[in-house]
Length: 394
Image (cartoon, rainbow, N blue to C red):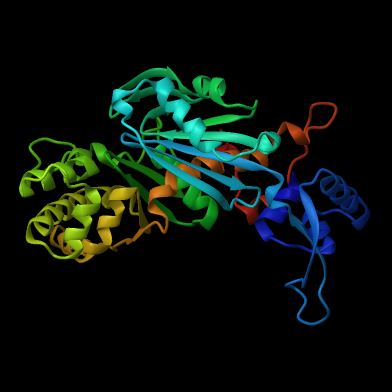
């Protein structure tokens, strides 16, 4: 496990460097490498050791990407998105299907999620699946139990158990709030430091907070839920009811008198500076800025990362959001950097897959347990360099 963590965190490594990171002699490290290559998880590749400035390319060790895959799914209000990642946490495939979760049963939602996640996987490849992660706009307690998901009408549901019944292979299953999954996935691939607020903006608006790469859940698992902030001038409505995708499309259709227009059409008109669309986008900017002001005073984030389909609106109105943020301050507090995730519509599904990738490289992976049921502990250097934190695992 420690060797796999090193190879994931560092990439290609020489045998000497791997032994040094593991704190073992070459002979002991060699035995581990032999076992991992025999199991098909590690391979020898030609390349130059990055520590060596000169010399001919040698033989390095690397993970075998196709040796394992992990499925991550986001069940949203209006869609289901699924991704598969390999052992190097690179995206292998992505699928999205329109789906009205409010009009369907939870079993139908899970069935579609699993079908999308395993779409294209040949039967003889199923045994390479090492875990399935599910994210949803819900308050989720330990063990994958959904306490409440008001946007899709779920309450007191053992989501993890339902998923296990549908998954075609017996693998670990993890369930996470969609915004938390988004935060975990971004932190997993970037190794975030400092304080970062993540907003996943779809029909609803969910929030997650990473502090030096560790997810901050709060006392009841609800930290970062900015979507429930009440906004002045919003007739007592919560933020997610004012800036969510459904609200924007409804406003746009009412203003144009056309029921056939969708969110993509709205974005196109904002981009083209069509007055009615710009007016709606201005209201969105004002509501978002107000909510960010309140949150920034409480948690003082270094950066704010926006995800979800609605985040695609932000670059077009970023200047207006900044102006509204400045207007609401009597003291010039430090302003966080606000950015849109590079793959904004994939964040939660990717993060759900990362949960299982992380578990595979952790003490919870039973494949690495010794005959006595114990498991070795990764060297502190490996844990630090890969960003893995045992206390974050589900």
